[in-house]
Figure (cartoon, rainbow, N blue to C red):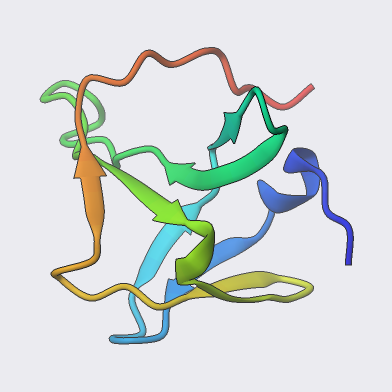
Length: 96
């Protein structure tokens, strides 16, 4: 199955380890020399409508993705393998 970033943004990401809804894919990381997708990024949720900033971003590597379906992306993340980060340079991701 071939998916564009535009298609992936509409799919909800669910962790199969605990059934938690993580959100929607907001961005991807690409290795520019090889042209390979390295990871998907879910931006942190707003705290108090954005007044208190955001939670940390969730970075999902390709090896953690178990299934990309029609409506959802199933990933396998546990507390030890979940990569979170703050202070990421973001570009506008508004849908056109």
